Image (cartoon, rainbow, N blue to C red; front, top):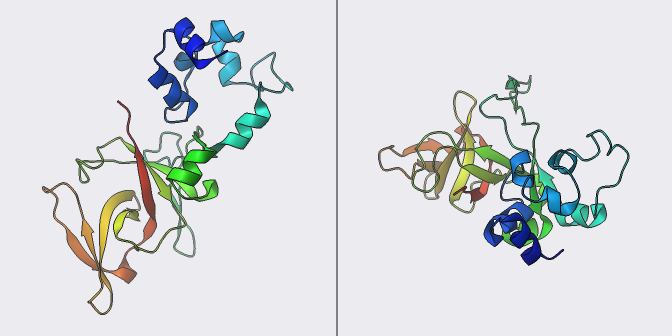
Length: 213
C-alpha cells in the first residue's frame, strides 16, 4: 500500500505519517488506530507484536528491513516515573534508571544528521526554563553520552550537585590556567557562572532536540 493510499484511508496527514515512520513521535496505541483496519491487524497486535496473544513466535511484517533501517535508543528516567532510583557506585559514578519504552530512530537519521553511532545515544527530558527559548521544559534532547570533552563549544548535559542531569551551553576559557568553563543558561533571567574544568561532570553532548507541536 502506498503512503498516499494509507493517508487517504486513515485520514492522517502525510506530515504526521512521516513523523511516525521516522521515529520522531513515540508510538502509542491511539496512533495506530487509524491505520489498523486498513493493514489487517489490530492496534494491540501492531504495538505488542510477539507479546500479544496470537502473535507469539510469529515474524512481524518486513522485520528484516525495519531492523536494518532503525535503531532503538533509551531515555533517561529523570523524573523517576518507573520507580527507579539513581545510585552512586563506590567509584563515585552514578547509575541512572532508564524508561522501559525506547525511542526508535532511522539509521539514516543517526548517521547523516546526528553523525554518531546508536550505542552512543541517549534521550533526556529537559526540566525547567533555564535554557529557554532554545530548549523548553519538557522537551527531549538527544545526547552523545561518549562525548565528554567540552570541545567544540556548544550544548552539553551536565550532572548538577544533586545528581540530576541538566543542559547548559559551555564555553571554554582557553586563556585561563588551569582551564575554566563558562556555564551559560540561554534564558537571560538565569545567570551564567564560571567553574574549573576538573570540577564539572559532563554527561554527554547535546546533538538535537525533539520538539512536539
